[in-house]
Image (cartoon, rainbow, N blue to C red; front, side, top):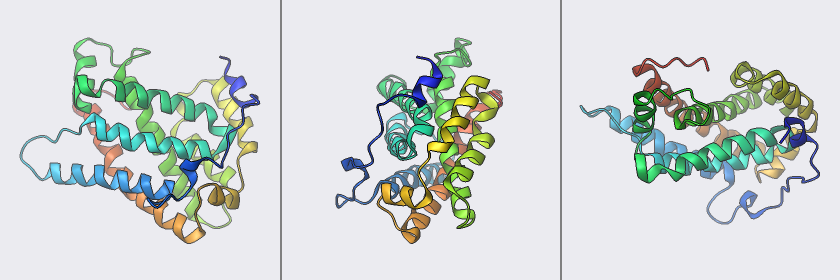
Length: 229
């Protein structure tokens, strides 16, 4: 499918789905923050042991799948990112029982010299990691000042995290789609949050996602794989 069709399709994203509602288990943001705090806590505890900590694919993918809700809440502008991110998380989840851990995924591709191959699982892991970092950067920008619009926060986050690795066509389409982003207040409404609750949950995610992102980066670095792709 042509990249521009993602932003011109008449299949609009609804913001009234049950996944955005508080069903007694917390809002979408709260669930995401909870999931990544658990992963971050596992990494922290694992690093205290003498043996090298191995992060399991299954809980990692389960936590990452929740982030798809956030991409969806950003509307058409991030529809391409949502579809790309979700497909790669699903691909990793499908092989969780085969590989078991993130490190074994990378080790297999290193052994077969397919780390940067178009459909390699390592490349997909790299893109998922960028998706997590994109949301972290967006949240950080969003919270930096009340005057920072969602468009400004998202545009800056995209330029910082993803734009260097995207083609001109993708960058152009994303830039055009930024005009369709919801307002700051609409985003909070979409996510069933207030200013105060959103700030709390976003800060929780920012803090919890950093050690997860760092863990993935270290897996690459330890194997002599650069991070500039």
